[in-house]
Length: 319
Image (cartoon, rainbow, N blue to C red; front, top):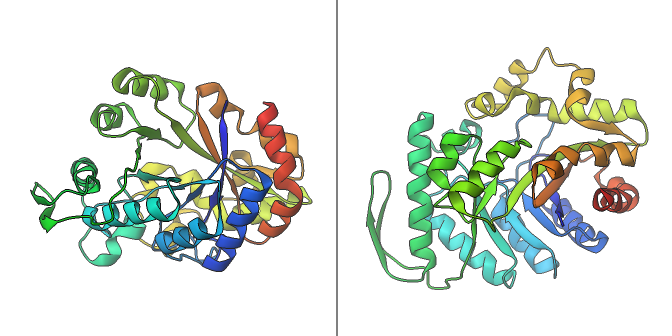
């Protein structure tokens, strides 16, 4: 049976609100919660970007049951892998075993800010592969000295160590070939059954396949379309473009011709709970074990959680 999660969108809400939403989502019955991990929002209209790890620490303390994940952390430029390993172990202990680390190759939007540039995709994948290997070494709690192609570690030990499973964001067959042996679970953005089958063939059965679907619930369709266009029109650009654009101004320029109608073609919008649930069906048909729902925008987030989230969750489970 598929697990359904709630997304803590750090780009569209402040940290205190996100903790409140996390508590409400657990009470409603979501199985897990994922947090984006950005330094910047995609669009200035979103207006937020608190630190994901600090926020997740507060969420871990405020919740009791719900599983927590990053979706996703880039452990290569903005964060050194040693820092990610320490953060992951600490969060696992704070949450009493409810945390899973999901990692990916990152976006220029968040990683260029530390002044180290933004390498090409092949280098980024090489850095990610080495980072995963190094994080696993450090999570053992043993003393680690590392001299790799991209990272160095000198006599490092995670003193409060913990076992943490790692999901890896993959978008194509080449990524499957590179990361299936390194990751415990698959994270991907499109309902591509062939990709999931290729992962199973390379990795073996038993891993989770984790996806995410945005919806925009509102009491009327026009309002939903407006919010979705204002907050999420960037999502139609595709991963190849999204990973390269460096600033919110770049995303605004790239999406200046997008219309609310175009956004609504890609994101289910409006008050119809059954229609919102049906937009998730392709992920279930493809074989995803876990799907996180994004309610687009902060404007109606409280109302969504109070009135729409529970019936939506029931409709999803009925699929």
